Image 1 (tube, rainbow, N blue to C red):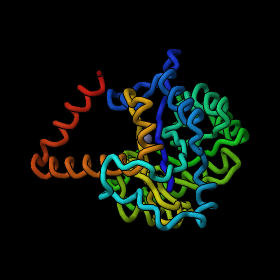
Image 2 (image 1 turned 30 degrees about the vertical axis):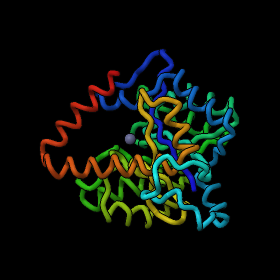
Image 3 (image 1 turned 135 degrees about the horizontal axis):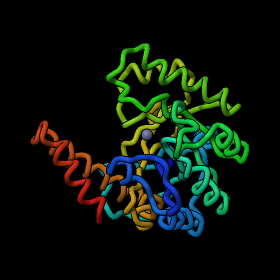
Image 4 (image 1 turned 60 degrees about the vertical axis):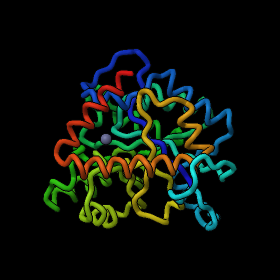
Length: 280
Ligand SMILES: [Zn+2]
């Protein structure tokens, strides 16, 4: 079993060239908090791995592992600790300037999902920086060409975003691009079909949860820390998977019920709640 963590930008207090919405900002961690997360993984000897290494090791997976069972009793301890994969979406330049050096200090490597049309724009990594990260052992993957809501597009446009971005990125980085991260977490059957035709090994969602083997499901879930996600929450993901899976399942069922009850008013309510939480 493994847990994929999804980061976006890391704010080191230096110049910030990207314009961001309040929602974007919510996913930017301070350098200090990000460093605490990574130091925790190292101090507690959490196995940090890559998607491809997880895939290669998947045969050794223990089929009796029940920690992905969302009905497991909360608070259960003693469950097997998941391996962790560290991913970064959007291609923010802080991946190169801040996140990668911190990871490397602890002997870790990251997986960076890049929007190809944003490469080299102010606040985003350049192709030279991406090649350098790749040469240093990090992995570069696709996060589409323009970061659209994919289900809203015609099928040919979906192919451009999913398939052409892979080829472009492979040419720019000079290394295979194996995974696709779904922009805005929105996809349909056509998106998955395009990803399969492109030859991706899998696609990454932003829905919270653990994954069994990388080959067990084409769509992989991720935990997505926010600016206020404490080290204790990362510890919970790494060391209390049954408890964490139960919490995730509870939150999901509550959200589903809220959506059902509130209909169109749900999104406005969610935005209000998220904004308030984000300032705390
Ligand atoms: Zn994104």
